[in-house]
Image 1 (cartoon, helix red, strand yellow):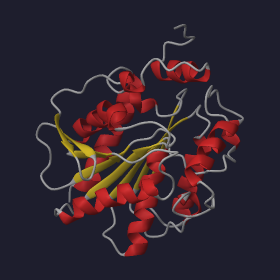
Image 2 (cartoon, rainbow, N blue to C red):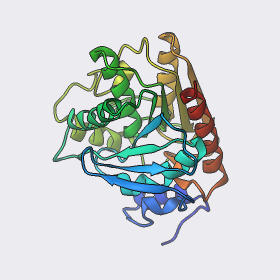
Image 3 (tube, helix red, strand yellow):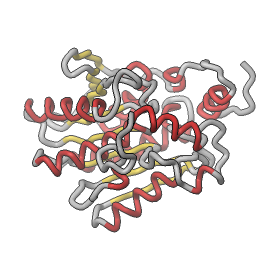
Length: 282
């Protein structure tokens, strides 16, 4: 495979833009040291427990992939690095993919995993996700608030996808080789399957965000979905939510998947872990 960059994340998206399926997405990250793994059948998922994990709190981690790809397997390493950085046991959850599963199936699956944690006495939970996983994390918090469930302690959103209509100006200004408006709108149409793209649980950018927990957003400054995070941060601030937004220069979508192999991914994961832990330690 010929690439035009030494950045493995950019190389992956350039390869995908050429229609190539290698390298494997999960191969971007190194294997995190010392992570104890335990698979679950119901809810489907994988516990990732770092050495010396805090007793009590947990992270619920939701993978990205545009609702058409991605899994616990693709994100196991990256979420393992996050678990180590935070020192918190992390449950990476599975959900069904398009076209067999469409909105609100994915949100129902992650809500069930959240309820499963609550039922087992886990009262301080950070919900984290990347790309469409970040969309589901935010929608889960909105649903929890509206249905009277205990709110997450915090939200960690990486390269969040929040605008199903792909209206952001960043589609025209970055150097993203893969995520075009046409592609993103196609992914959205598959997920929505006829549902309203302004439904607040499908596209929580349009939700009432008042009362949501502290939220940390990370985004690549060159990715097409940059404005999705910037607009969400603005809306959260307007709603009175404590919010932090970090933009990472020269980076593309979900660059944190290079954890253990690139300095910028390690920096992002380190920042995320420290912030996450601070929201879970009372």
